[in-house]
Image (cartoon, rainbow, N blue to C red; front, side, top):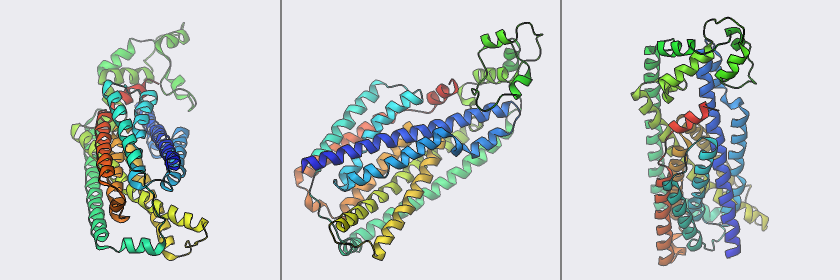
Length: 411
């Protein structure tokens, strides 16, 4: 029993780590695209708008998506075939530790004392849930799944759950429209040219002709060479007007970190709406993901029965489970991508994890009627482990976007 549980725990941890790395790579691609678009718009081109629409063409984003999808399918399938949902879902908190590490490595975040304490609490909580949550689960046939689905308790719980999801989706759409309107108004109020201080600072630095900038291709670095290399290349040439790259660098330095990209030029109200929209998207993604886990658990059980000779995959209910898996997985992917485009992974991952784990825990206990399989001691220790996980998640989520964006702009 414990050997099988160890395999399930290892699969869950591996999937969580790959999941975090995939989302971090996608977030890095989003932020680099914003920085590139801001530079191109300052140079007077229009390629920045196309870059925003085609961020999915970035190889880094594609690699992150493949890793995200791979870690969200194979490892969870192995884990759910061995562990209950209310154990496999909290174990995903290990991904928060990996997320903090990847954010430090790829996005320039700092690993603080709060991160270390949160890591220890997450590890202790995961160990507590994994040890005391290991139970023998019987495989359920389609008839048994249908009986569980029709119970009045689950029908009421499911109705309340999806009403809450619909309310959050409506709220996210409202904040999305608010952000778009405020950002448009704030962008229209911004001057079309860089500040005079930025232009003066650029004029005092060595320059290269503008033609050198316009001839650059997409394989070259995002920002122009350092001032020393510019001076070496322009030696013996007459001092002409400052190049656009120098103007943009001075503009970023004079305006601060919040001048990176078009979105960051919006006012405080637009930035607040942007953050709320991103956080709501992360919560909606987590809630939908919890239902994907429950459906996947049912599907894995049917596959296990088919392997043992009890073929039930041709039943319409099995097709409905597959359709539900595809629908919830697609919706989860859409909302997690929206959240990543608006907020830091250090905000998105904890919010998505907390909402997903809590919803999966409640749904699993209600739908599969698993409370009867646990002793009072097991329930108490699982609750204690969940509390430790929650505190660790809170410590790991006390981060922001500003340091990440400043680091990426320096790459």
